[in-house]
Image 1 (cartoon, rainbow, N blue to C red):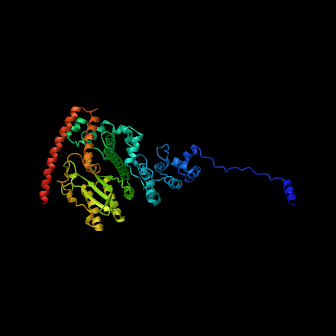
Image 2: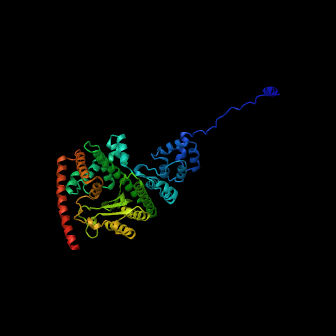
Image 3: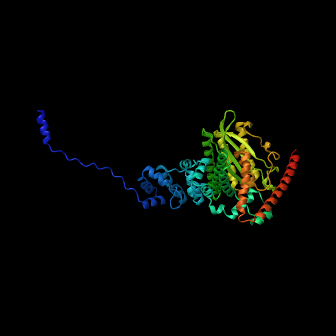
Length: 484
């Protein structure tokens, strides 16, 4: 019976098998289709085209500059097509990317005068939170660039986004020389053909980055000293980016947008600091925020710190102002010039106070602020700490009086940057760097300024500064006697 059944089954026709056909993927868009989608403002078309690529392919697309020289996220902001950003984010793009000049999407829109687009991003909490996560430049980033590019000028361009022709121009080099030697002597300026011309913090940052990189490559430096120089180069490059973003925020005529953009930048600064304080390896890096009034450069340094016997995570705040010269606008209301140092734990209340301080100072940066208004903002910060934590968290500003921390003669751009340089690098290494800096820029300027005239001008300038220091010291004694 079983055999008969098998025979019967063998006689039945075998059903035809359909060939196995693999599923067909949609054809990858052409280059022209992709360019139209990324260069347009149609969210549906952008999503349709981009979704036909794999996640890895999309990451490559989002990281590749378009014809504008910007990656898709920043290009959309440049054109004001911010409706594309949620689409990009949903398909894996990072909205916190930065491009030339250290601008992210918000500041790219402001720079391109797309104020409605900037406002739309600042008003959208999801976009704002996705963008406000910028990692600061670190010494490791600078070291990596140096390994890839032996040419110091090329690395400087990559770190600062300033053209090589600009920072190597005779004008820029001569202005650097003037500031390095704190020179304001009329005859010296006339010798260099730069009478009456000033200099910006941004120029100073670029030139100092280049000089720090050059100094870091000198063979006599120890590995620890070289690392300190690279950290300082990263810090000055990061400070340059902050200053450019603040400047961009102040270019809009809408004060509400300016306020929102500065608040957003303060969030960026605090996010970088908080991330470092939370990092267990304690490789902490300061952030230097240029705080200037018209004709006077000052600096606020915010350092992640571990405070007290309990090593509580927190912040150390240094406000560096040594003055420069003897003009009235460069002193506080009482005729004195002094720095301020405070510390605060990393708590929500202290973070809010620190954001208020940063916002106040960055608002002064672009308005007709005075040195009195800067010190008033610092006093509000100190008063907030006293009210919340008590006096134990404050260093008495009177400990930084004129005899201890004298007003410097000459130029404020460097005079007020040097105290921070001493703290971070150590006085000995900082002094070696400044001596190298003077030799470096003198040699550069000898190519277009007569060496003998240059040396004579520098010597005359030193005599003038010494006379000015004596005048300031005399004024200091008079001021303190009056106060007593």
